[in-house]
Image 1: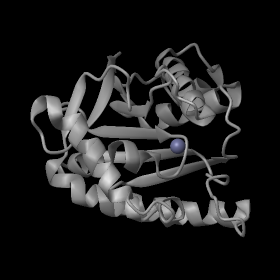
Image 2 (image 1 turned 180 degrees about the horizontal axis):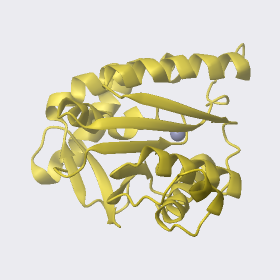
Image 3 (image 1 turned 45 degrees about the vertical axis):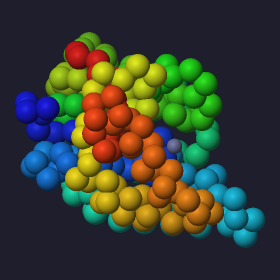
Image 4 (image 1 turned 60 degrees about the vertical axis):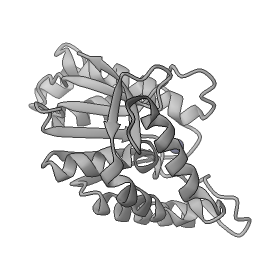
Length: 226
Ligand SMILES: [Zn+2]
């Protein structure tokens, strides 16, 4: 992680970054690294409240995401505002992501592990695949010639970290950052208000991920070097 200066977290929904790696993000920004988010959907289907409408929900969730990101020291949040649950691995999404990767020039890209078995949310699978494809298109200059024409040169991130992986090989100690992770997740009121024991569940998950390395709390990733 020493050579990593800029980190780009690309997630399907508002709340995914905090749930999957909020402790690591707090740790990295405290070390002076720059973290930027891209949130692909507006999260407009993530509610069990029968009075809620999708427009109101999308607006609320952007505000929740901004507040959570600010707490963790994230520099910028970019919202792509696709409809929740409807993402596909198509050219539009790949162009958007490749363009932003070339523009932002991250050293590390973090996204969903699309190869985890029984990963049922379609947006998580789509984002994981689209980000992986977009990294190749950002890296190789002959993809999307229009980018070169407007000065967006090819960019190769050093590695990808996949979140909630089947076979983790990176374990980040977040013991000092579990409280701020919980506070960041708490900003997503629309998502957690119906889950009374959410804090306990997050702590149990962190403890389980840390067990092998005798850490109180951890987050895990699968690294792919480029
Ligand atoms: Zn999600």
